[in-house]
Amino acid sequence: MTAPPEMKVRIGIGAGPSRHDPAAATLELVDGCERRGIDSVWFPDRMAAPAVEPLVAMGWAVGRTSALKVGSGVIVLPGRNPAVVAAQLSSLAALAPRRILPVFGLRPATASERTAYPVPGPRAAVFEEALTVVRRLLTEESVTFHGEFLTLDDAVVEPRPARPLDLWLGGLVPAALDRVGRLGDGWLASFVTPAEAGAARAAIASAAARADRDVEEDHYGTNLLVVPPGSSPEDVDRARASSAHRRPELDPADLLADGWEHARRQVQRFVDEGITKFVVRPAVAPASWPGFLDEVAEHLVPLET
Image 1 (cartoon, rainbow, N blue to C red):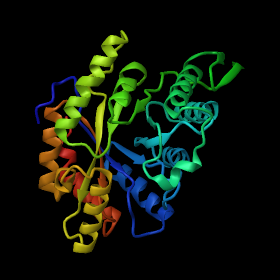
Image 2 (cartoon, rainbow, N blue to C red):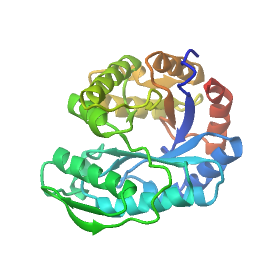
Image 3 (tube, rainbow, N blue to C red):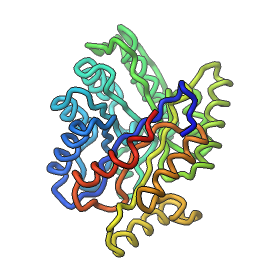
Image 4 (cartoon, one colour):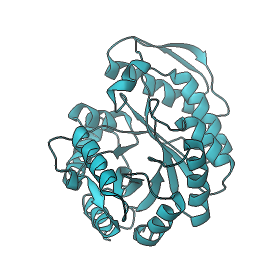
């Protein structure tokens, strides 16, 4: 592993498909990560799938752990009340300092969820106003904001976190990368190759420079989908089909790590491109979360620096 010393490689776990009730699987996942000393656990925003709501899951997880960091998958911000989101995050950060890792995005990943997040105008414009409101409420004593879509007068969120939260963003298209540079504190990718991630990192840094700001060198990450050894051929076919649906122009083999040795090589390729934060997700439902976590701890956690 060749990351510069100021860039900390960290391996977290993302909640994914499960063979159990999602609440029971969340319990196994959170307790298992804490017990094994895994850095972080991440919860997706999937209204149309069997998954625990991410902000609820984050609060529940920090309440039963002492060291585990908790993050969201890409929370859809447009369509949510940004003042309520800021209040939720502020409370979480006050109760669990330095353990709350929010990531925001523009729209749901699947078409079936998109009608659940109505917005009063162009989604990208609403997103930028909402993100501005969230950041200001988390850092200022009182906020008055009169935008095109959102209005606040003397709004207050307490208790504010002693240390400002880093607000990471997702997205891969040029406009999204530009937005990360202008407004975000970090970037979390999904369904990208190492080369794409490296190019995106450069684009974000360039956008940040144009906006006279910085994104920290080690605030670039990606989800890493791993097909656990022993997965059934049917499960593997479904994972490949899902990957092909998301990125039909790519070979699924470029996006799915087939086993742990492939996953280790992918981590190295991403690190070589300046990507140092990883959310490892099972591409298919693992036979058991404890077994999956044992394998992550054995094969991937030693790559941390």
